[in-house]
Amino acid sequence: MVEFSRTKQEESFAEEVRTWLEEHLVGEFSKLRNRGGTGREDIPVEILLEWEKELAEGEWLGIDFPEELGGRSCSLFEQVIFHQTYVESRAPGRIPNIGVTLLAPTLVAYGTNEQQARFIPEILKGNEFWCQGYSEPDAGSDLANISTRAAIEGDDWVINGQKIWTSLAQHSDWIFVLCRTGTEDIRHQGLSYLLVPMKQDGIEIRPIFQITGGSEFNEVFFDNARTEKNLAVGEPGGGWSVAMGTLAFERGASTLGQQTSFSQELDALIELAKQTGAIDEPVIRQELSKTFSELQIMRYNQMRMLSSLGRGGVPGPEMSIGKLYWASWHRRLGELGIKIRGASGMIGVDPTPPLEDTPRSGYLLDSLQRTFLYSRAHTIYAGSNQIQRNIIGERVLGLPREPKSSV
Image (cartoon, rainbow, N blue to C red; front, side, top):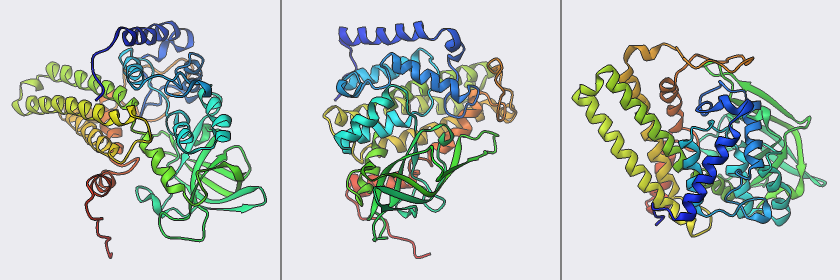
């Protein structure tokens, strides 16, 4: 198990993180404290990308990567300390840096030496930004239903099809694409995991405008898009196992920083309940107590899950336990917040002013309203709750597969 107590060296590491953040959240970055993050568009993407480059210059993007690839080779506990200290310092909500969190660890586990040397250093320097090409109009949580195809022509893969819900595609340099490359059309067989440059004539990006007015997501269309033949990760046709490995990395050490953020949200909600008098209602008080207890359980459970990472290797299907738990917990927190807030929670009155010379996009939402709306997506994206339960039942507990509906 990962222990909670810190050595002097680990305390020194935490102080290094705090000091660096204080020294660099200045100038153009000074107004970013406690801003940004999921569901917030009060900071332009361009500024958040610059902040990622600032982190890269401080060698904070690749703390868990080998030094020979541009990382710091930090221990698992040091990774946990970084993510917790980052949130505790109320540093800016990070843009989803999929290259760092998903693609680069996948290349370490499954990529060739040439692929690692080509892509990981550029990702950790903040020079190349990535997006994920998984979901399709008929393949969301049922990822094995994808129909985007690729075939070899000369020295290239030629790709045709469509991806959807692609976060920040309009700002990305590369995309990793799961597509069909074999003659077999049987679910998980004949799939390949390709690395594809976004800046080419064969790719069209169409923003999806949400009901809140934002456009974080996109449709991506491939019309004879090309990538080099040697940019398939793993064996051609064996992309399903690589894709599952990528999803497992999504649930690693950064989740404990996420839980620190959850703790801050719960503290703010308890304070609101005190201000409104809702804390005096027995049912509300009981729900807040239950929510607090569940957050502690979440933390202990995730530390147990991360113990497997400390022993090395690719995270296993047991990581779905943490995803199911925290997604459901955060959604309940959002619902409880609106219950405590009452009717005023239905009105957008974000008190946070926009950054200077920055147009505000979307509805005016305060932090509680954002939690309510965006936590509902947690139980859907990266595999819905039903999918997580299936994974736990079938791949962790060894239960029979769920019967397929005949409808």
